[in-house]
Amino acid sequence: MSSSLPQHIAIIMDGNGRWAKQRFMPRIAGHRSGVEAARQVVRNCAKRNIKVLSLFAFSSENWRRPAQEVGYLMELFLTGLEREVAMLHEHNIQLRFIGDRTRFSEKLCRKIGEVERLTRNNTGMVLIIAADYGGKWDICQAVTRLAKEIETGHLTSSDITPETISSRLSFADLPDPDLFIRTSGELRISNFMLWQLSYSELYFTNTLWPDFDEAELEKALRHYADRERRFGYSGEQLNELTKDRDREACSNNA
Image (cartoon, rainbow, N blue to C red):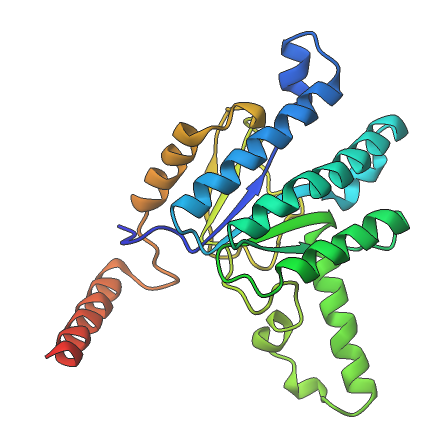
């Protein structure tokens, strides 16, 4: 059993287009409803004192979609930032963006920088928005940084370990996701946080993203609570480690 809520939840918000199609509406209507669902999940996670929430807003591969849809998504992204930043700041939420920003407009990049600076010192939940992000891109940029450090003599090849790679990845100062959620029935992680999801609990639901409400979040959290997170240990070893931690805690409180 997991004894607590996850520290970090990562979500692929999938199914906006299918939600709209089922209702004979344009895809943009699904994206608009998806923004409202994102707003609600942020509030519900903050209310439960989740430390980090990561939302996959736009992948590296999403540029392949029709230009009109991509343009609308970029516009929705910008207006969403302008509308939501005051609420996020008021609730002490720190907002961060991960991904390659080189293909974004100057106006969007400027707004991203503004909201990151505004919320930088907030001490509540950290909200990560992954935009033009891909797990392969993240690993590649980390390896590139390490290669440059080797070229300049600050590192040698023998210094490269899983820990040094992890330290150069996006949000290296935050815990890896404990719980990964994907909506809409797709059973893939779709190039999202490939390195960081190595020991995450995976939860897939048929619910389309615009319908992912507080009750659906509770289902995912119950699934997480029922999991035994072993991290390579056997169940017996895990029980002994838990007992040791409990005995140490009792000794410290005595």
